[in-house]
Image (cartoon, rainbow, N blue to C red; front, side, top):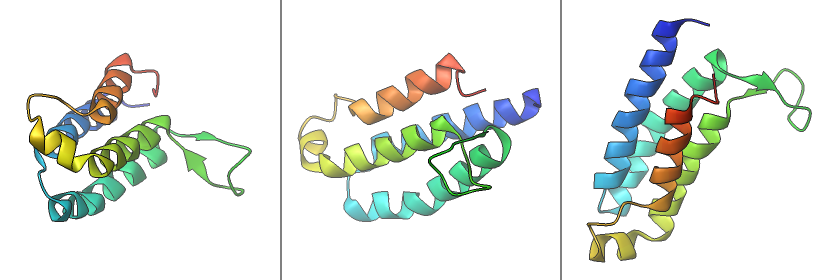
Length: 105
């Protein structure tokens, strides 16, 4: 596994987390879905493992799960985070913690 690929995953993950944090509308979050899908394809292609619960030949990187959870958690509680902009969504914090842990490598 290439260190360069890991650096790209970290850099792009932080950038996406920042975009999720700063999103204030449903349409902004919708626009992020395409970027997140491309990011998770990159992750799954480079940092994945086989999972018996997935169809044959599908591979999965846990970091993909965390970034989607961050997006969905922000979407589910958008009004709350807009009313409390000083609070970072739990999903984003969990994603950043897992990204930083490098357990996905």
